[in-house]
Image 1: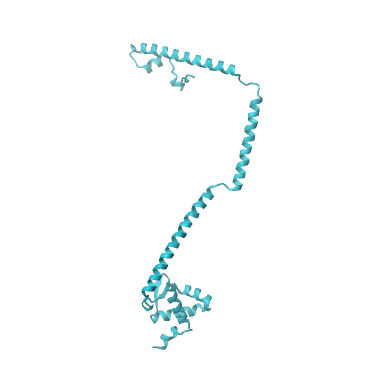
Image 2: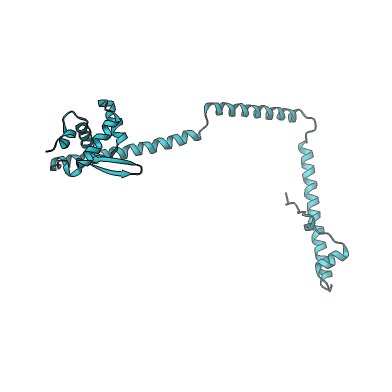
Length: 220
């Protein structure tokens, strides 16, 4: 095996560290991501990380793919050890458990969002205090108005109210009677009138309640 191929795989060299990291994580990374993650653990510089990635890609130890203006690197899946049946079952169980946990978290998030929406729709303590103060002012104003009404001397007595209602009823009754008489009389005249009802009213000068938007009050 050539020396250039052994360099990145050395137990302590940058190439070995980078290769081990990509295989352990088994997910795509940019050079910047690899440097950022390893720099905290190993203090490895960005130039060393980039050089190690390029060497590993040239040697076929990792895969390299363009991604926009950058490149991403990931472990060659064919060089990773195949998982046994027990490991696959463990992974399936882990996926099931994590899926269940994710669903529970989503349900909790939806519940919290609903509670937050409900809380946002309610009044704050400050708003409630302001509303209470406004209601107190309204009550005070209404109380003052009621006291003025009670202390007034021009109240209508029950007898006066009864008299007004009786007169109103009488006048409405007379209104209906006269309107019915006028309608019957006009209908009789119109039977022999050569023109229309509207023309007759205009010639005679008759104005109707409807023209003035007047409605006969309902009987009390």
